[in-house]
Amino acid sequence: MQDKESEILRNQRRRRKRIGKLKNAIMLTILGWLVLSMVLVIFLLVRTISLEQKVDGLLQQLGDQEAALQKMQEGEPDEQGSTQISEGTEVPEENLTPPAAAGIADAENLAEEGDVHKVCLTFDDGPSENTAEILDILAQYDVKATFFVSGKEDEESQALYRRIVEEGHTLGMHSYANKYNVIYQSKAAFEEDYRHLRDYLYEVTGVECRYYRFPGGSSNQVSNVAMSELIGFLNEQNTVYYDWNVSAGDAALAAFTSDEIIRNVTEDIQKYKTSVVLMHDSADSSATVEALGPLIETLLGSGAEILPIDEDTQVIQYVKADSIG
Image (cartoon, rainbow, N blue to C red; front, side):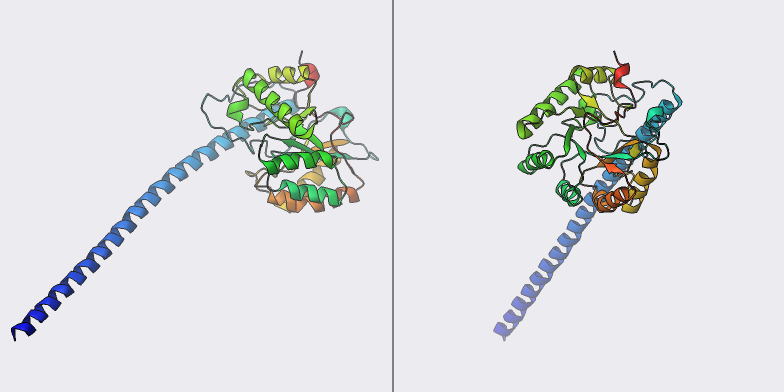
């Protein structure tokens, strides 16, 4: 009898232990989920605040640049430094370009009836994961373009630099760092970035790049140094910089569809004898890749000539290089 009672007691103790362990496991699981949920909530809150600040900054910068471009059209002087960057300030390096092309209405470049439209397709920010496909499409139509590239030292990017040159496209510079708070911090910083990219591209491709595009354009409002000083430096280097008079609207912030990109370009090129089209070659440029083939077909079908930038190309500049002493 005693043995039976002892066995019952032992079973009861074991059962209580199992129940206790199960309770502890449940409590630990609940506690873990609560802690994880709190961490996720805090992380999402911080990210939301950060993204809101970045969006506010981008909208402000875009508004400032659009106003500056409007002044350029109206013949008003461009006041430099109205939105300068301070040391340590993070300014997004990509997509801080005007949301649409204000255009440069040089009288000699306005199209007249019967003119053949010359179109220069230019791609900023590459190389990227989309560069090879862009090059494939250009090769399919036997069309040459211009790539304003940044500095990337991985083997795949180096191969893409070489492919751009080998396939007859124009290789231009878009700054090594492609970060506003780096290249526009001072004149010395800009010069160092320029020389770094120029020498690097020569080392990789054997090409001495002669063309440059300022991130944000020559009338950008984020530089800590007057753009006239940077333009003067490029003049000393015998480097020609190009802005644009037609924008595809394919910056990530704008998020236009491929159909909208095609429409943006085809409508605006009708205004000019020579159109320099701003497009982007970045990880966010899937719509650009999708639009490129149909855009080329539309341009060629209209009788336009698609050409790379070279020494014979009409220079398109918001701030004229020859106005800088």
